[in-house]
Length: 89
Image 1 (cartoon, rainbow, N blue to C red):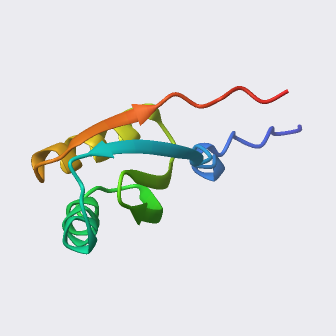
Image 2: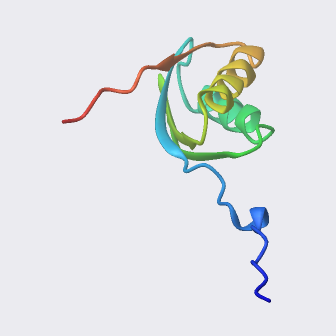
């Protein structure tokens, strides 16, 4: 008698993180960059690549995670908008 091996759901991989860009209004210098970096440290499942005056480059698996980053930046006192990714051919 042959037995089939049960499906192991625990080996499924987490969704791949995608490059995302957030435009930020209201940042004027290094103090603002520091404030934004601090705000983003509290957001889970996020990899921040760079924070510059006016722009955040990060990696997030879902749009909701990226939106959570926008919310944290807004809560820190800035206007944050997730930029739609440009389709590549």
